[in-house]
Image 1 (cartoon, rainbow, N blue to C red):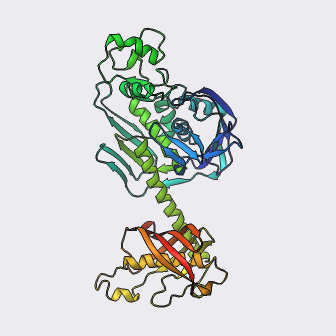
Image 2: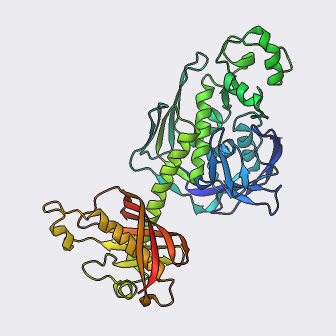
Image 3: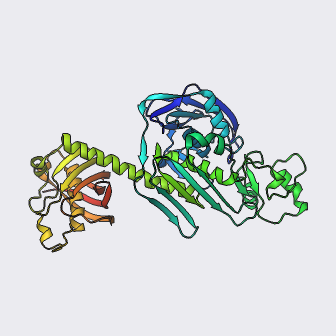
Length: 464
């Protein structure tokens, strides 16, 4: 597996029309420095705003993946992202002079070809990976969707689709090496849709750029020969339209015998690029799609954020801290046995605070909770989060000793694992808002990489 980050060597451009919007668009891939990530830039708008292609900017997955920042949007980014991720390109700016990349032939191959022509070069910085060390599961019982990632030293995909249509039915494929197989075995697979779905979308003015030149249309209903003239007009077919014997409208030839499921792999790679870096894990997907892909990325992002937080905590514990227990006692009114913060590791005024609580068998509450099975009461975990949050709030007061924080409400309280003697609680509290002494904060407590508890807390700051 590649070790260093990569970008392209030269600029390169492509022109075309957008699949859903039908707009004419010019797109340019440009090299980017280490750490930039994959960024879309709308050069047609004032100030040429940029949107980083990550899960936090996804706003719609109904007909492809749409990202946005504020009022600035880019539709249908998955094929472009798939090409970049498929070539293991980490840093690239994608300039657009309209709202949607060109669909071209409905696959990622035109983008792959352009990027290879531009040249790819390694950069002087290590590539970042998320290593999947325990099984992740997304399941939708109603739709029969299963998406699982199991530990693996390499990024692998096994994908199955299952449609009740004789032209499609059940298809299966596997990709064991992104580097060796993506370009030759998957990139050319085109997007596909069912005739009835396409007709409905076209009738209401959607998929304006869609045609039989950039999508495989599967016939999923009875078609009378008298309809061929209408279909010819609807899909821009210049010759006499025909149903053919394959179940594919106009009898268009497939590029692979299982082209549809291979395109699902292309989409998944593009959607997983929204994580911001590659993964080491084996993806097993059955009847999945953009929505489930994106939900799995959200799960992986949470794991990554937790690991980054834990690394920070461990580093801070070993090398220094912001506030020790003496400083904490100057800010908080709590004392033994109710002071539940040992150190403050990070403090960004008005933004967030992180602290730790070392849980020992000597805690007085273990005497009765529970004899023979000591477990820290959930209400005290929340109290610890509240005290850490209190430091964030009181730190902003010029006369901290003259103020107190009173909590007025709790929402979305969740307990994920028991906290027992020997555990260290790593607590992060983020400020959601603070107006005229009234605030809302979100607290999360971790033990190692596992979330122990989470809560949204409302509070007021009052004079003593």
